[in-house]
Image (cartoon, rainbow, N blue to C red; front, top):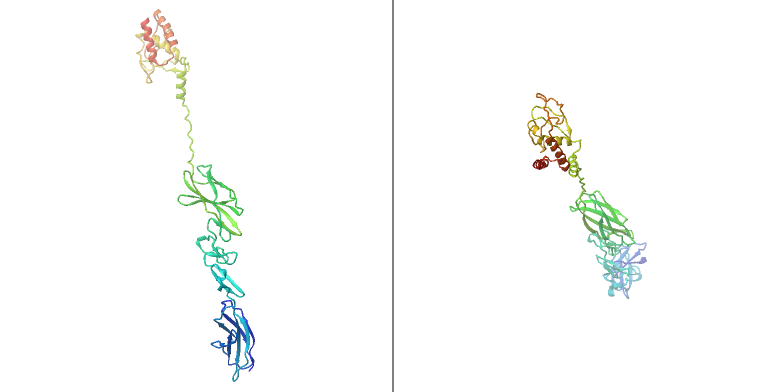
Length: 401
């Protein structure tokens, strides 16, 4: 019976306590195989034995790093072949000694070993130590081999491993506040991996009014409502080795101004201007101020006369004995003014007939003339257009006469 050929041992990566090998059967009828193995001599038999169709076998439970002898005997219909002999050692167990100097897990591999780390840790650059994973977004664990956070870094951390801290923008301030907006400023970051900033403005109801990115260290914000409180958040953006991250947000609260209102100063009315002018004037009323004189009886209206001449005539009419029987009574107008009735002329014999009655003739006597001079003095001394003041002065003159 011919023996099998081409015995070949395979690399075992699962464990260090196993041998795996293959062979080529002879060109003859084979009913089975018998496999013997041992460290010095092949004294132990593999059980169960390989069948006639098998071309490989595995021996388990061996010692790591130990040389073994393996014999394969081919069994025919009536006879057995000579053994096919081979030798091979199991993989050495580097992890058997001080765990291979690994912090967490030591795993044997063909030709050596490898250190691994538990979840939440990453293998350090020395290939033996395990460090805490970076600060991954959402509290997820980083990859135990690469240390990469598949979900990205939490705010305030950057780099591929999310293990470099970054601070928020500093010196956040609000200036140029109006009823429609304001200007947000902050100190620029010296970080060389800085990409820019993001500014978010929202009301107290957390409804976002502005969400804008900028490369500058300031941003004007417009289009807001007056007299409204706003929360401002400024975040620094980074790109480290192709991995994007951001800082924690710097926050400040401010309020827009009220809408400005302008109240114009009231303009002086013509009446107010006239009152000021009359108060400041020390001269008699001008000829442009005219009065309409009405007769006591009848509805005849005398022509308008100059105000200064009219005042003299009124005074003469009141004091003249000859006119006291013909002149109308003294009366007060609606506005408190002096409103006597008298003939249209006191110094002319030419008269005008009033409607429905004969004309009245006024003759000035020497006493009247004396009083007339007194009237001129009274008028010259008087600077008031109030009839009550004039009456008081008339009374003084009558006592001296």
